[in-house]
Amino acid sequence: MSQDNYKEQRPWGSFEILHEENELKIKRIIVKPQSRLSLQSHKFRSENWTIIQGEALVTINDKDIPCTANKSVFIPAQAKHRIANPGEVEVVFIEVQTGSYLGEDDITRYQDDYNR
Image (cartoon, rainbow, N blue to C red; front, side):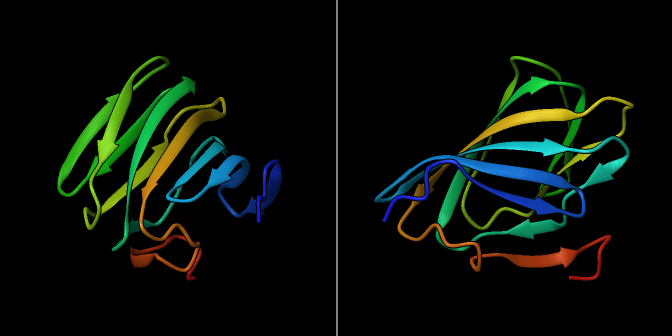
């Protein structure tokens, strides 16, 4: 079942599923100013993030990577990662997930500002 254009609000911003098929999901994600996602990992999927707008700070394992528009990062399966928006404008990025399972429950959280 396709969930194209499914939108969901989160405490840090929102995401919209642009496309989904077997072993592929594409999301458009917005991170509010001064917000960040949880430090997390995924067992079954890797992710490619391409920044569209804003200035983000991406953490992959113990490395912080500043990212601006048109920059991309690859997050391998099982890597601890997060994206933060230290700026005053929204960060918008495209996330391409690939792997054998792409469910929202494939998240292990290590640190979360919202106590999830």
